[in-house]
Every structure is written in structure tokens, then in C-alpha cells.
Length: 575
Image (cartoon, rainbow, N blue to C red):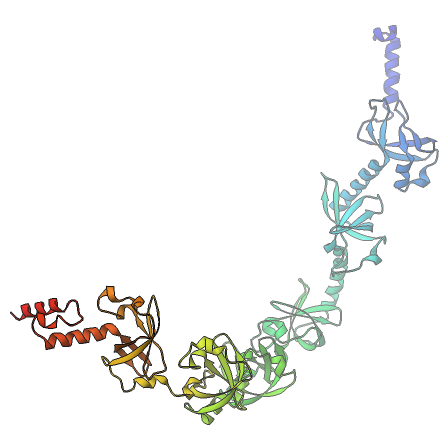
């Protein structure tokens, strides 16, 4: 103990010198990777000797096996380990071989990333969103996104599993220690070199034979050329006619000849044209006239119609509304097939928009005009009910392919039209009268009640203010329902038209079945309108009484409560 008390003694100084020289041989520091030599192996552990440490570090033998270091578990072998603690609470040295391997591997990855160098790895397993790749040199695990596996979608990658291959480091997170790699970049870099050599073969003006339609986009169509190059035909280079989408002209898998119109060696792109292989048909569009019948070939069928060729390169649109006179919303697929040659009429030529529209129905006889010639307005014909809805019937007249419209209000003069409609069903045969024909609008209107005598004709010899006798059928809060004697129709006398005095204008005064007189207030034979009024009849009778009797007392026996006052006022006016 005396030696440590007196540090100035020669013995103390010599001991300090020996100690410093011994520790300086080995740089011992926590958090650094050191080399440990195996000097003892047991069933579960491996004991290491590290110069400068006061005790032997211990490694779990399973840790070494999981790292693939089974061959190194021999006495005398050297293993790099991470010194985590020189002394823990139990006085033992803590080291880790796996962490040392990971740190060494990370340093290599950082170096490769900074130098933009590919690394060797193998796909070991799949995970959510991609795969796990193991770095062959260090065993470090990295993430391979699904989008970076290949430059083409791949449903099966079993042939890539556990196969050593190159990967490009695309992202490193030094804080979290995560690495992201790409196989796609390696493939693309090789293809880029190959693609540059392929593009050198082509020059503007070359003709490419039998290029296959590969895919569409909103701006054009991609063609595959000899399975070595994809070229673009822009939307404007597809046809001289207006094209909204490539699928209007091409089908996937079709083969077409192309003309090279541009070569970009920097972007490695080749632009082609289909329309420039044929002369511009709009240069002689004056040869075609509107409203004249021409032959057209169906080249493509769509949901909204069909595209037809008047001549090679001159594509026209045949809209579904121009397919038939009578069939609404018909599909071109049910009428035509590709390659059919049909009659059509040119309805529009727009040179600026380079658009030609045609009609198939205009090349056919208009069945509505035929109907008008055969059955003019006023004709009574027999028809078959072919359809029915909540307010009308549709009637087919003989063998003509047209349906006439019969509204429920034209079924009967007497009953409610909607109630009368319920009496008819599909396939009923009825006689109807042609009321209206609009050939251009493709409309025909017929009526059933017009084939029978009109009960309103009872009013033909009647006049306004004329007195008629009616029978009360029923009453309600709105007034009286009455039927004129000798007429088959019912009319309403409104509550306000029952009497002059409001206190007498009560529908409840009547029970039904009474016969009363009333006057015709309004009458319009053309519109079949008649308004009846009891109040008007009272006013007419009252006026006659005033004109006939000139003294106050002469009219007291009349059933008018205010007549005497009216007479008195009349006398005062005379004075």
C-alpha cells in the first residue's frame, strides 16, 4: 500500500510506466469493433480472449450459427465483435458479433451508395409491399419495393428467390439504419444501352412493317416493333379524320405499317405515323356531296355508333341516332359487323375540323312519310297494342314498323282517362283515328274516342245564357256534379255559382237526384268547354223582373230577398 501513497517514489513511477505501455498496445473503447480470439468452447457458449480486457467476453454459440459462422467456431479463430460495455453491473464484458457484422455491412453499403455502385444480394423472402434482400457480403437486410423488382409487372417471382444478382441502392436512412434497393434500375440501365443501339437503326422516313398494337393512352397508341422497341403514334397521326381515342381506330393485337417521322437519340424515342402512309383524303373532299347516297365500309363498332370508311383513310362517324328511323337507342353491334358495306348519306362535312358525319337511316325510306301517304290525318285504322305505360298506349298500325302514340285522355269522352287505361292490355286490337303526323319528328298521335260520337255535340245548338235543365248526380264541398237532360256527360257547378247570396250557395242544400234549371255561362265547342251556373240564371230572372215591374211592391212575391230594395234604388235613380 505504501507504493500507491508515495507516487513520487521510483517504484511508483516505474509501475505507472509499465501500466501505460501495456494499455497503449490495445485501443479499448466502448462502441467500437474489436477482434476476439476463441480460446474456449462449451456446449452453449464461446469464450474470447481480447488483449487489454480484464475478463473474457462470452458469445452465445447460437448467435454465431444464425450468422452463418459455424465454420469459425474453432479454438484459435478470430471473430470481430462490438464492445457494448467494458463492465456491466455484474462485472462482465458485453460484446455482440451480430451487431459488429451489421455495422461493418452498413459501412460497405454507405460506401457503395456514395460511389453509386451496384451491390450483390439475393431475395430471401416476401413482405408487405415488396421483398427482403440480403447483402451477400455482409448479410445486411434491405427492402426491395414491389415496383422496383422489374420494369414490367410480374405475378410470379419464384425464379428470382435466393438467386445472387445485382441491385442498385436507391435510398439509405443513416438514422434508422434502413436501406432500400432496386432491381429495376439495373435492368433498365442494361436496356438503355441496348435501346440506344436499336434506335440507331432507324431514321426519319423509314417504313416499319407489321408493327403490333400494344397499348393505348389518352394521347396516342403504342406499337411493338419486332419485340425490341416500343414506338408511339400520336393521336393526331392516327388518321386524317378526327379521332378522340385510339380505340376508335385500333384493336389490341392488330398489325399495321408505320412511317418514322421523328427520332430522339437523347430521350431514346421514335415517333411514327399511320396516316402519312396514305394521301390526305380531304384534298379531294369536294368530290363528296351532302344528302347524297354513298357506300361505306364498317371498320370499327363502338357503343355510341360505328366508324365507316368512304375510302381508305377517310373515316366517318355513323352515330347510333342515325342508324334507324324507328328503333331508339339501338346498338350498332346488333345491326352490323366489321367489314359490312352499307348505304349512307353524308350529313356534314367540316373541313376545318376534318370531320365527316353520315346517316344510315336517311338512305332508307322514312316509314313515317310512308304512313302519312297511306293513312293521312282523319283516317280510321285498326292497330295492335304493342306497349303500355302509366299514361298511354303504343299502337302498331298493320305491317308498318312504326308505333303510334295514344294518350289516355284520348281513350274516352266520359270516364277518367287513367281509369280507362286500365281496361287495355298488350296485344289488344283497337280501332283508332289518326290525329297528328310529324314525319320529321318521328311522331304519330292517334285517338280512340274520336272514332265514336262526341257527347259534347249536345251543346251544338245551345247558346250562352240559355236555360237548361240538369239532374244533380252528387254533391261535395266544391259544388255540384250535374248531368244535362239528354246528354251523357257530367259537369260541375262550382260552389260560387250556386246562388247569388253567399248564404244560399251551399251544396248541402241538395241531396242528389233533384232536377233544377241553370244557365249556360260559357261555351266553346272547339275546346269542348261548357260552364253551367244557377247563379247566372237567378241574375237573368232578376234583371227581367226589374225591367218588367217598375214599383216597389210589385215584386214582393218573387223569391228574391233584395228585389224591393233594388226597385227602390231604381226609382231614386229616375228622379
